[in-house]
Image (cartoon, rainbow, N blue to C red; front, side, top):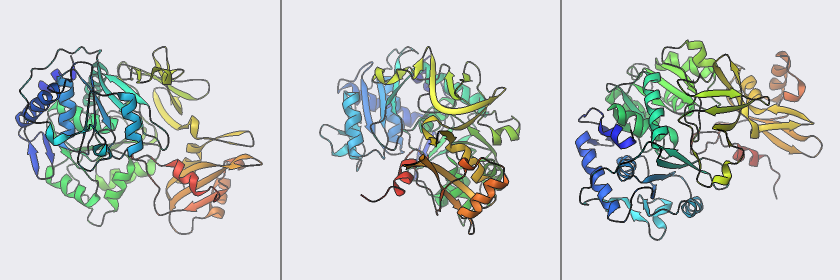
Length: 469
C-alpha cells in the first residue's frame, strides 16, 4: 500500500482540517488535492519527479503533500524558516521539476517559483500507481550551520511508522490533534498530516505558536493529544490564562528532545492532567523509541521509551545508538553523505545512550561531547545534574575552547535567583561528581535560544562565549 491509498481509505468527516476560521471536510480537501495534482501534472510533474515547496503551517502544505503522492511525485518540503541561502542550496541539490512557495517566504523571491495560490483549477487526474518502495519524501535535517542533508523516505517506510504510532499512542478517529510545528519537520509531517490523515481524525493547524491562542484552541476544539518539545508545554503552563480545566480534554503529550526532564514530565502531568511521555527519533529515523500510552509512568518520565514491532535499537561499545527498521530513511539525497552513517541496514544516530533491557535513555550527542584535559564529558550528563537542582528549570551545556585544557565546561541555565557558579560547584560536590564535570562558566538566562526545530541552539550559545574579533 502507498500513502495515497491509505489516506483515501480513512473515514470521512466534516472537519478533517481546521486552520484559522476555516474548516475543511474530507471531500473538500480531496477536491483541492485533485485540482492541485492536476495543476502540477500540467507542469510536467510525474512519477519520481521532485516538487519543492516552502510553506507555513497551512492547509496548502497538507494539500501539496497529498497532491505530490497522488502523482507518484516526491514531496520535498523546505522549512518555512529556512533563509534564502539555505533555500537556494537545497534547490540546487534537489533539482525539482516544480518549485512552490507561499507569499512572503524566501523561496517566493526566487525566479521560476510558483505562488501556491496559482495551483488550482486543473483538470482532475486519477491517482498514479505507486509501490511501497518508491520515494515519497525528501526532508532536510535541521542544523545551526551549513547546508542540511536531504533525507529520503519511501511510501512504505512512512506508512509503517504511521500505523505503529496509531497503535502505540492508542489513537483513533475520535481524537483531535493540535499541530503548531512546521509541517516540513518530520514530527509535523507525521502528526499534522499522516497520522491524523490515515486515522480520519481532526487536525487543528496553528500557523504561529502562541500559548494563549493554543489554550483557546485546545478548549474550543477539545484537543486530545499534542506532540512537541517541552518549550511548547512550559509556555502553555506559564501563561496567565492557563488552568487545568482548560486542558481537560488533553489525554496525551509526547515530547522529544534532551530537555524532557523527569521534573517537566511530573509538572505537565499534574498541571495539564494528561499522560506525558518522552519519545526519541530523528529526521532519518522518526520516533524509533517511545512508550505505549499504558506503559509504566516512571518509564515514560525517566527513559526515552522502547522500540516496537520490527524496529531495533542497539548501543555499540562506544555508547553510540544504532537503529534499524522499516521507518529508517533509505539514505541521503547525496549518497556519499551516508558513508559510515547507513551501515548494513543500520543507521548510526550519532547519539549516545544506554539500554536497560529494552528501555533506551539518550545521554548526549557524540558531537556534543566535551573533551577537557583528555577527559570525555557528555554535555547531557552535566545538564541532567544541573536540572536535578530544585532551582534549575532548564540547562544547556557546551564546550568552550581553552588553550591549556582543550575545552572547558560552560553552562547556561534558566533558574531562580540565587543559583550561581558557587551554588553550582557546591551542588556538584554534594552529588559526589568528578571535578572535571563541574561547569567552570555559568550564566543564568531568562530563556534559551531555539532552532526552528524547537531544539536548543548550542552554536548560538557557544558564540556568546567567543572573544570579540
